[in-house]
Image 1 (cartoon, rainbow, N blue to C red):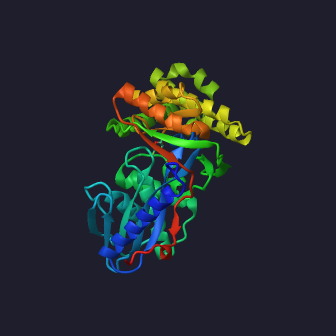
Image 2 (cartoon, rainbow, N blue to C red):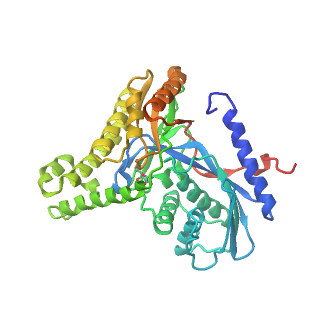
Image 3 (tube, rainbow, N blue to C red):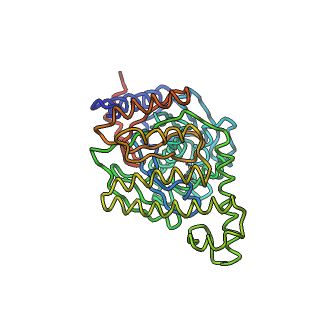
Length: 406
Ligand code: GAF
């Protein structure tokens, strides 16, 4: 289990599922399906997805559960169990934003489906779970993917996995208004237990790498910092990369994204761009190389080399891409003085959220103690730690096993 007691996590999961189903029966008619949709980690390959590059994420054992059934009317009714918040609207025609946040992730999916010709009457949905919000573990992708997956099952729509990820991503881009890449939605929907996924964000071809060593743990350290500037800076980084591409296109019109650029080519034309634009592009190309080399490390079972690349990734994000923050740097630096840490780096968009740490089993407990103390000492802030296991992507749960009628 994720806090060290066998079965502990399982029983939390049972309670969560039970709660969601019970809440559904309390509010709505009929027997719902139950969808389990995971959050994610990313081992390496940050800010590469929207540059047509490579990423190495994995789905984790933190989930959003969605109980869903047709409503029988044109209206859809949504209940966010964790927020204890309700939203109802007609979803049979053109959709507009809810004006209150969470419903937009669900409406965005219905909107994208509609645009592709998948139309339906309303649905009832209760959801909730334990993916921390705003911590960089992709609770929004889990919610979008969960709604999408549930609808395809309820309505018998067969949509290939790659298309599923695109629909969920575009729900976020077009409806929620966040210009994210495809990594989070792709891995949440399509992850595989005990495997990391090497995803080529251009071709959307993917390959699974076994990552299931009992002597290693994936530990997330949550700074608890949530910075508003994260999304505006994210868009600034995106446009800096696009600017680099535009400049290089003048030399080689065939270049469509940073994926088409090599490091020597970039270096050769450094003088054509602002230093900042060069730094950003340089980071992206180096990070792509690191992902490919990290995958070779996994093939060679060279976890030490893999861990070194995680540290290099962090340094690049801090110095060249400039999306880290003091708290994230403190966490990563602190691991240098703690025994048993194979690799550590900031994870996700940056400016807060979590670091991802590969930690040896024998040193796990002292790691947790020491990193918590060091963080407290240096920042006067409390550190939240999540121990995670790699799990399957979005799927249906067997509801019959869950007893809800007391
Ligand atoms: C966020 C985005 F949603 C992803 O698409 C990705 O760009 C990531 O930041 C950075 O690697 O999670």
